[in-house]
Amino acid sequence: MVGPLHLRIVTPQRLVLDERVASVTAEGALGQFGVLPQHIAFLSSLEPGILTLKTAGGERRVAIKGGFVEVKDDVVTVLADEAVEAGEIDTAGAESAVAEAEKALEAAPYGHPEHEARVRDRRWADVLAALAATQ
Image (cartoon, rainbow, N blue to C red; front, side, top):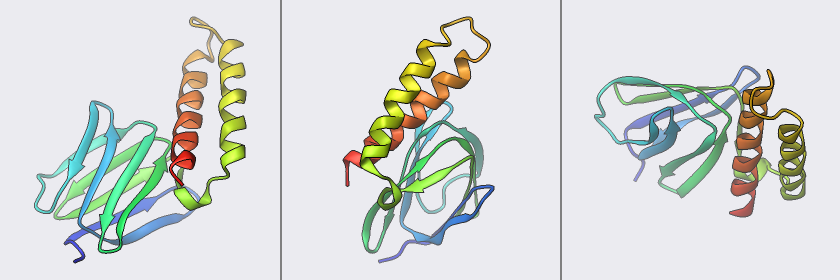
C-alpha cells in the first residue's frame, strides 16, 4: 500500500526523488523526526544524516548532506545541499572520504576558521560510509 504522503527531494543539481510514500524519517536540527500522513505543518533545517522512507516496495535510505524540509498538506519537500541514494555510493570511496575528512579536520583544530566546515565534512563522510555499509 502506497501512503498518501508525497515526498520530493531536490538538490541544486537535480530532482533526486518525487514519489508517494507511507512515512519519512530524517535528521533535523533538533534531532530525528518522523512524518506520517496528516502531520502538522512545519519547517526545519536538516543535519547530515540518513533519510528513511517507507513505500509499498519496502524501506529506502537516502544520505542527506543538510538543507531544509517543509511538511505541509501531506507533502514533504526536502531542499538538500546534496542527496545520494544508497545504490549510488561507492563503498571504497566512502571509506577513503572518511579518512580524508579526518585528516582535514586534524589540520583545522577547534578555533581554526575552517573548523566547523571540516566537522560538517567529516559528518557527511560518516553518513555516506554508514549508508554504504548497509548495502
